[in-house]
Image (cartoon, rainbow, N blue to C red; front, side, top):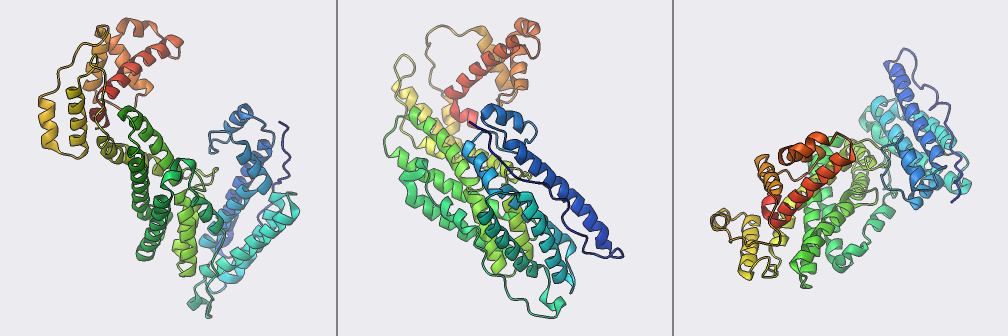
Length: 459
């Protein structure tokens, strides 16, 4: 695959300082402009280097210098970045919003805002270089006109002594909203339930925004997370119920639930086209219509956190929060509804399988009394295959002693190996294949324990 051509360029500056030297904002603009230029230079240089990427290996090498980019290599995504220049447009959106938010105020603010936007539009034209002239010229004009309209939101009509007409509805997010409603292959069987959940999510976010009127990005994020959790639960439950009706075997159903968890999280907040950033983008339109400038700026900032080059922590925080919630609550409820596992008599009897299912159902429904009765009278364990090695028993005892950690990190595996295999652990030096094999051995032993008692491990 040949390297792609990219004609991006670094502008000389973001425009002249619009404030007189006696104004305190003169120094603020100099500082803000210098910091923004560093970000523009880094992005342009990153895109120019990205144009030489031709495969996954060269992408991995490029990503060592730009670690905010997605981990997986996608040739279509890279081609889109280079052909559309959308990353540069998103960065200039953040620069324009930050400049107006920090520096524009008072009756003269509208003229200053217009000067800043005109200068930024000229710098943006230099940054996007010689991409598709007709398409870029149209998009640049739209960008300039849109921000000139938004600038009116940053000036109070009372302070300016005139009535500022409301800015028209920004339609940039409508294509994203329409694309987000298309059901991926994993959720085609529950397409109608998913569409209903999406409509409920957007309505709840709009109602929350109108009631709370958050003024910062952090406040807006905290207000919107509960609605996102309810959407994830509804989608997970609809897909799990439909799958359960097919009569899958319990073991297959458990594996499918793991796939469903990943698919739900990806649909919620994986990239710019997922449900959360799309709903936030629509929310910014609503705030723009209702003349809520602080909420509008917060929504634009939160939406920009899903930029692949953004270092904001919101996306990772939301993914981790949804993963923990689905795994510790919603998944257990649906796992308990699965029919009892039928296994060979050499491993477990039918009665023992039913008791395992009852214990899982009792714990997932938080029936402490029933779970306690089952734990007092566990089913007798029958010998299976070769006798268990004493090292495996030591691993099990030590794993239970340290609190049954679900995440088997290298530190946890080293602690278990040092307790169960002291002689081999002493010989296996750090960062050697022998140490890795030892970690894999104790990791497999612990994972067998998790499979044997899934309810206890999840707890």
